[in-house]
Amino acid sequence: MSAPDLSYTPDLFRFHRRPTRPVPVGNATIGGSDHVVVQSMLTSDTRDTAACVAESLDLAKAGCEIVRITAQTRVFAANLENIRRDLRAAGCHVPLVADIHFKPDAALEAAQWVDKVRINPGNFVDKKKFEVREYSGSEYDEEVHRIDEAFAPLVSLCKSRGVALRIGTNHGSLSDRIMNRWGDTPRGMVESALEFARIARRMDFHDFVFSMKASNPKVMIEAYRLLVAELRKLGPDWNYPIHLGVTEAGDGEDGRIKSAIGIGSLLADGIGDTIRVSLTEDAVYEIPVAQALARIIREETSLLPIPPLDASPSWDPFSWRRRASLPITVDGFPLGGSETVRVVTSLAKRNAVAHKLKELGEFQPEIALESSGVLEIDPLDSDAIARVNAFDGPLFVTIPDGYPHPVIASFRLLAARLHERHPILLKDTFSPSSNPDAPFLDALLRAAANLGSLLCDGIGDAILVQGESAPGQSLRLSYNILQAAGVRIFKTDYVACPSCGRTLFNLQSTTQKIRAATGHLKGVRIAVMGCIVNGPGEMADADFGYVGGAPGKINLYVGKSAVKFNIPESEAVDRLIDLIKEHHRWIDAPV
Image (cartoon, rainbow, N blue to C red; front, side, top):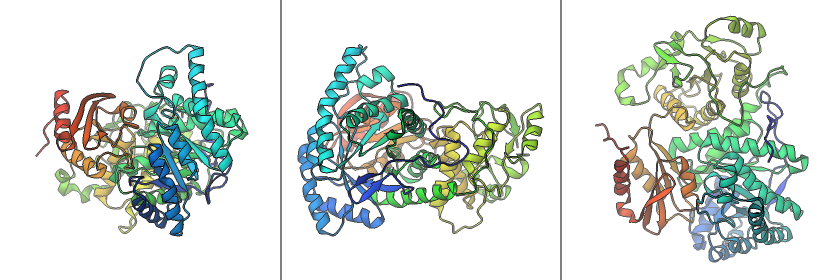
């Protein structure tokens, strides 16, 4: 795969929706229009027909346009016939997707009953062994030929039956072949998917969709950008639709924020034709979040576009690097340079919480906007830009409220035109809210998408949340966005997968139990995985892992290595705490 250039979007400062071919999936269509299809996944056991039908009906009623069901073996896949029959008998025609890992025979069975089959290139044929080895050219080609032999029958069946495919790479389950040649990288994720796409195209099959999912929004964003850049270079007929999702996003505000950063930033760049917000909650709660996120990005990108201007990005969209501003002190707090990204709030909000600072814990107000001395300039005003750039030292700079253009594009333009030495204050919106009844979900998603996208570009030395009027909530939102974007770690970080039919324990209650026991471990990253499908790989960035190994049994990991096996679920949280203590990462919770 050749090195990509900056061509994943025609213009980083003006919105352009990526044109894609339509891929029919039952009575839905992915791609070919501006409509973003919302989907989700069942948590019920696939063998339980009644439960799957009931959950599918609830999802469809909530507005879910495609329902995915796990099919871990041929026996599970065979029951998709009954689920489809009863669902259609109930008058529901929502398209069904079979989710396949490890079992090509399950995929062949499922393709007889569903409208789309999702396969994971990392484990459709390969069995991950975490082996380190050198592959010769012939050895590599032999493994690709083995993929062809296993995948071609599925492609042929899907082609004959009019069933679509999703070639869905997961960062956590790349094959040993890909890992040894490309590493655990976004580029490896792209090449893994292209191996399968080339087989489909050779067989003149084009009804497929790509995805590049990861639990780290930065990795996810880079992988999708690399994919789209490569597809653009391969030619206009590689215009396949894109499925977006942050895998193992977690629950509550953290899960919603992480999803909004990853999905929202790509939608804002015109990438993405179908989305799933993966939450460790009942699947029906994913739908309003996905719908609201798609709507908010439509609103943001429909704002007055920035007029054409000769400007080049000062950052690399394919490799994160924090913008190299110079340090300054603002309102008594150092920011810029290598200093932590600061939280700015209004003086009124800071005064409103002044009496309960201890209760706020980590969510402390830092810089007051009115006393910050921040300089407001229009990034389109060349004279103002020239005056700032002529100043010898660093100046704290932002964009004025009321600015009519989209937030992401505006701050990108400011970063491109300003000399790097000047620190930038990011705003989630140019329209501050004073409405206490405004939906908090909208404020959360807009702030996470706008601020998170810029932070993942390496832009920003301080942030200001203005779309939420409540002082405490706006502070909490600010810190949680910084944590999710990976630029300021102030609490325990969790990687928690959504429930599905493979899950071997109650993910929701277990995740809450682990949070309650470990939520004070600042800087520790804990993965909570319902099964082994993405477990070891998605835990690559985690310090410790809690993974379902068998019904009622838990395996504990340090990094990607399993160290404790078959622990009774009733003991597993205590044993996880013991493991953290063994590695000297435990501190007692404050009173």
